[in-house]
Image 1: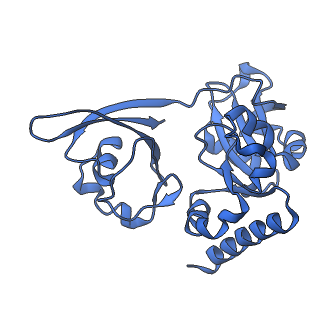
Image 2 (image 1 turned 30 degrees about the vertical axis):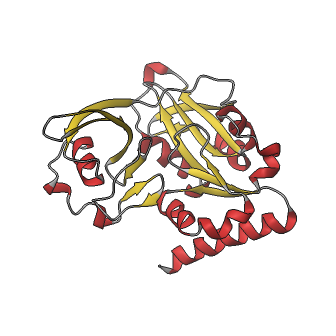
Length: 262
């Protein structure tokens, strides 16, 4: 474990202890895949502090961690997405061109770069959902007003920012592609090959590259079997959700369904 990773681990342990001692909910910043993996590595150590992760909407990649979640959701009730949206200190900012006539085609990288260009740190920004003409950026509530005030342009496009209540507004649907195909077994390496339209041999070293995560947990074993609902994220390539088996052939191959985020 690197020095930086050890610092992240220690910080999460401190937040858990603080929540337990004060009996209050304590939130982390947004955690990327590496930070989520560190959390999973110590999950058993902090279960006493009732941890829970959420990123502002269902299936968010970047997630905020709360310790003391039982104080937010009493009586042991399992909260729905709308309740989570209202309970976590996560704001949603709608970003759209001031004048569509002069708007450029903008990417996720463009919006993120503009947000970071205001001086805001990466760890207070969550996912960014795109439509053809605008974006919805999730961030920590504490920096929402600053972001809205300072973010006036993305590349050469003037933009207007406004807060929206994610639980009251129709967020843009996450774009996905349905993939079906047959594999010899429901192994990680086989599904990686199917999802990214590559041969299994060409991706055989991918798990060992420490770029593959299952539900935020680092995966280095290509032979690991997946469970229905698992979300696989590969840094630099994308992510997909395993939807399960649909049929088996007489020769023992398995037809599977994937939902790839595009």
